[in-house]
Structure formats: structure tokens, C-alpha cells
Image (cartoon, rainbow, N blue to C red; front, side, top):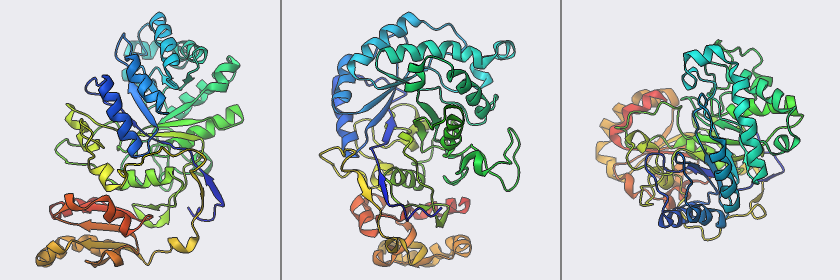
Length: 444
């Protein structure tokens, strides 16, 4: 999609992360460390999972809220069990006073596994879900917290679009205070597809049917799930509700083999730059521009800020548990030690002239100088990739900077720093691999 001719784009800071899920890191020293790291990469959102039956410490929360972070509490309650609303009342009351801005209570209530076969076949699960969600939302509003509608599994055993539409129709007739403060959520999984897949929603892909995959049509099982949900909110409420993206940067909720060192960074690169209002070329189709992310998306939270024990999360970590930046943060050039968090005022951007986005090459394979002696072997391995994409090849960073997509092959990956990326191009897509990873390119 060509969106180079937009006159102005006003962007608030929308980058965020999911906090540790595998260990509890709720000490005061932890909060100070991670506030600093989030500020360094100019992030202002953090999703924190609440411990069972107790509160996150006050000082931990206040450190983030005083720094201007938008905290989202995920209570992750069991939707098929009785909810202890007395406990929730206490927690929401103190969280609201300490500065928490958003909260949600359930995840994926449209999956049979969340209910069990008996309750799934017995209950009207939409009605049962709302029976818990509405009083939760009321408690949130009373404590100056925005209630976030439970994130749904895209597709799911109960088709997520039908589940959401029926739920919103019921919520449209509930307390105006709930309607006026309601925030939607959507998982930002890419499902291994281009992050342009599904863009345009049902209005564009009208032949899409639940549980049926047809040729020449796309659906909501993509990073663009949020677009389909926004359409439904506009249909029912007469306006698009604000929405928060969760777990961006992963294919879906089935994580890759933990033996991999790091997940691909081209998709996080594209998403983070879209969030900042930049023009971005599709990593899977470098000659095409990605559709912008609209202002209704108020926060986009990547999975995961860090993890300590759960190895299946390790490829997706942006930092070590002690705060050292890993491949996603380094490759995307976000660790520039920004001293002052950007505000909505100084993030107002005037679009860059179109001529600056007219790249000379679609793809460029950049080799590090240290690989010159191995070129014969490398070119043999790259032959299928070269035949498919017909890229330019060379050792010149100056030439590479003229490409929409740069594949950098180096055996000195750790020496390739954020300054190198900035020297190549602010607007191109860069993927860095080691020579022994060339075989993995066949999946592109």
C-alpha cells in the first residue's frame, strides 16, 4: 500500500513489551533497572501478569507509573472457575491508586480448552464470559483503570469475529461508563505470513468464511487481526474503539524450537518503524509498502522483554535478565540511550519526501570483508535464493544503503552494531545472518 503521500502523522509512543512470565521480578531494584531499559529504547507500555491471589508490590508499580509508563495488568483468571471479586476489588483499588492504567481478566475465552468439554457444551460461553467481564469492567472504571476486553484466539473453537461481535452487541447496551472506557485487545501474531496479510479487514476480504480457507482471499489470522476487530467496533458502536496489541513478534502461541539462538528480526523491525509513522517495505515483498498502523492502536507490546528460565521464550528476548540488549534490540538499533522519553508533541512528524524512498535496488546481499576467501562456497549455497530474488551482491555498505532490503551475511555478527545499521539506511529492512544459517533462507 502506498502511504508515502500522507500529509502528517501524529504518533504517540506506542512501543511496549510483556514483562517476565517465567520468574517473579518484583523487587524495587528490578523496577528501576527496567524503567531505565524501557526509556533507553523509548518504550512506554508494559504488560505484567499478576501473581495469583496477591498484589504486585506498591513500590514496583509506582516506579513505572512515576516514569510515565502505561502499565497493563493481566490477571489471567480461569474463565471456567468462580472469580473472587472481593480479592479483585482490593487489587484494582490499590492498583488504581498506584498508577495502573489498564487491566484485563481473561485470555482466549473462545477456546474449548479454557472451559472444558462439559461447560463448553452446557453454557452460552459468550453470556458466561460477559457475566464475569462486565462486573470486572465496572470495578476497573470505579478505580480509574481502563477495562481491556479479553484477547481472543484468532480463529479459535468459537470463531473470534463472531464471539467479539456478539459480545460488543451486548456491551453496547451496558453501563455508559463501561462503553466510554472500553479498550479492545488483539494478539499481534504473524502466523508466519507477511504482516500485510489480512490488511483491509472484512471490507476488503468479503469472501472470507469461518473455518474455511479459500484461494485468493485472506483472513484475520495475522498481525492485522486488530483491523478486523476495529471494523466490528465501528459497526456496533459507530466508532473504532482504542485497541492494544499483545504478543507481537511471535508467529503464534506455539513457540519455535528453543535450540534457535534468536527469532528473525525483520518483522519486529517493520512493526517498530510502522509504529513510529515511517514508511516501511514488506520484508516478504520488498517492492511493496506496508499499510500504516492507525492511531486507534494505542500500544503494541512485543513478546518478550526478558525471560530467565523458560527456554522456549529465549529466541524472543530483547534483553538478558540483567538488562543487556540482545539481538532484537541491537539489530533494530534501538539502544541509543535516549535520555528524555519522547512526548506526543515532539513525535509529530511531517512525511519525508517520496524521492527519499525510491531505492535503487530491491534486495542487496552484503558480505562482510572477512568472507572474501569463502565466496565460491557461499555463492553455491545462495544459488536458489539468488535465482528466486535476483538481488545485487557486494561488499560495499554504500551500495547496500540503496536497497529496500539488505541481507547481511557475516561471521562477525556481534561486531555489527546499531551505528552500522544507521549508516546503511533509516528506512530499509535489514536481516543479519551467519554463513552457516544460509540454508534457512530457503523458507523465504
